[in-house]
Image 1 (cartoon, rainbow, N blue to C red):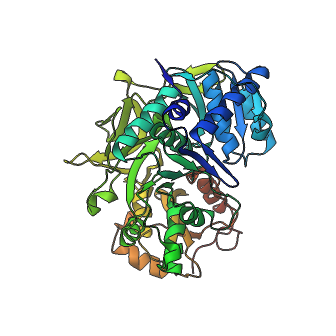
Image 2 (image 1 turned 60 degrees about the vertical axis):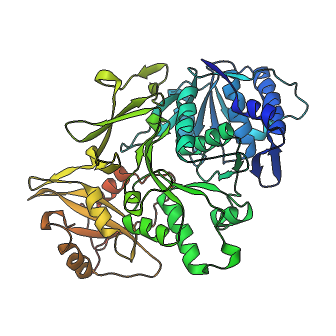
Image 3 (image 1 turned 90 degrees about the horizontal axis):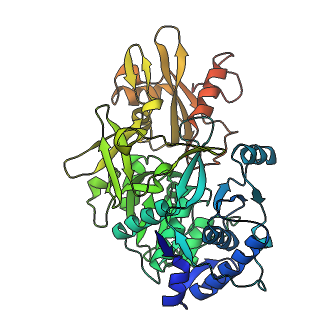
Length: 480
């Protein structure tokens, strides 16, 4: 099935409406359509054709948006890569995935005098993008999504969170993440504007929300925390008025309950959600007007998706937004079970009103003394402490119990806690076998390079710590 490119369609219907707002550059839909059409011609002159795999390496920019859209009009497959990857990793991924071109400087392909292309149609069945997702494993999986998967994901999202011409959605997530791509599709299908923030600017998120009077924004937990801290520190002066915000979509990973509570106390219009790359982004989301207690869930199933909880309490999904499979070069693994269901590896439950609660990942679970332990349960309890900003719990080998939980804690500001304080608090919240045997300070060497914490890295650090003196080795020491 073919459809008109959303940008081209909006250029016909709403030519003078704003489409992209970026530092130093603003495009109407008419102007953006012309820029995309010229870029299609440039790409074709360089030999890029249907199903050509093109790696894109760069920060969010209006040029990046133009290039992505031009590739999709041609029918090429975009492979957005993390710009923080060293060249050796980019080259290794490119070789493994059969990538034909690597584009690191998007503006080289933006030429004002290039010929206009008449390519305006897009096939929903065409492979559109390969997204690398680490999930819970050390090596990235390559998720192949069709244009239709991204299209229907945005269509269902827009039916749940209203988006209209004149609205502005901040491009707060990287375009190498499915959440970033979702922002583009939602805006261009609704005739709204994408706002590209100045990434190198201090407090770019907070300043962009105010400067551009953003109406919609997608946030992961660390971004929401920074926004809340900013609001609490600066107060509610008129210069910090966020009343123009219509929706704050939360995703990427589980949100601590106290963070949700703080967002509600500040009257932020939050929508909690559950999603995954294999489904093109969102699967469930809370609708507008959701009661406060339901905002601690992951919301209800969106249109064009199906969801069930199997006998093992695993979340299974399918629908028009589902991926084609995992890619390894020319090979595509279908990765679906009976009935076309994809088993996510996430454990969850659905209440009588249809709201999904995600309990954790099956492959994060470990056994300690014969008892099953879900790290996410312990993390949720520790996250309730006012001193704790972030926590990750992983198993550490134990001669008696097989494994014991160990907690890495990132504390807020100048906060300090003692091991006795933590133990006393946890004894009133958890059974003894779920209380961590070790508490580690958050390693200073860990950088947040993705939207999810890599548990495999913390497991590795913890394993290394068992081979040396726990209380003296750098990055590995218990609270005293």
